[in-house]
Amino acid sequence: MVSPIPVVESSLTTPRVRTIQIDQPWEWLGAGWKDLWRAPAVSIPYGLLFVVMGYGLVYLVVSRFQYALALTTGFLLAGPFLSMGLYDISRRLEAGKVPTLGLALTAWRHNILPILLFGLLIGLLMIVWVRLSALMFGVIIGGHSTLVETSTTALFFSGSGLIFLLVFTLIGAVISGVVFAISVVSIPMMLDRKIDFITAVLTSLTAVRVNPVPMALWAGLITIFTGIGLLTFYLGLAIALPLIGHASWHAYRDLVEDGDIAEQPY
Image (cartoon, rainbow, N blue to C red; front, top):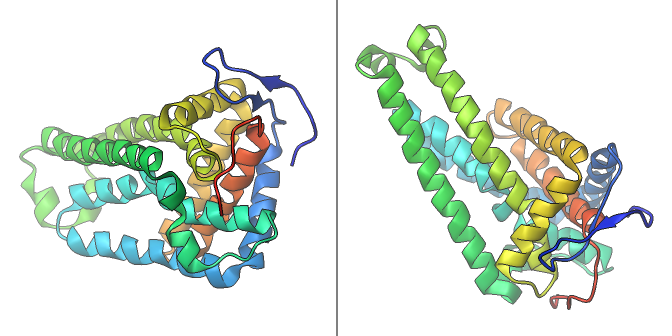
């Protein structure tokens, strides 16, 4: 945890947010790494679930590249929501309690409505992203059917394919940034505190607003570690996503003051 440092209080009566040091995200990774190996029998199986889900998505859209790319990135958009069990593991370790996989998988049970509302929001964003990417694929690549019918490598070595990838990346970065801003502390907060969906999202936005540089670094680190996991044909996600999930719990604990909001039960 960081030492007492300046805090910023939102005008919308959200919990107070700390101003953190620029290099604080590296400490979150260190704390997340420790949590990962304090409970490997829970964290790694949880991470393997991401691997299985990734392969499942690939199987469903193996012959439709535009959907495969969109669903893979959309799946990652849901990462903060799906990592809720990892936050629960770190929360229990912090409190001196013993985490289990069953408890991690049902971590949502004490604050169902706000978490459900957030899940619906993420689901809506995923649907919009998948449909938008398919539309971009159709508009930019259009009648170049050979790109779809031959191999995906053609997409990386043609003018229209490269334009598609550029537009896809730019729009995807914007949507990912929005998801990051609204979720970086909101989900662990809803898990940890008796707080509503709107207040949690506003607090998350405040945390990003008052700490733009360290939060940009944190977003970049998340992207890098997730990318490494994907480049290992999803297998690396079994370690990368638990590491990010545990570190995200420590990010929340450093960024948001406890205040007077009641804790959720364990």
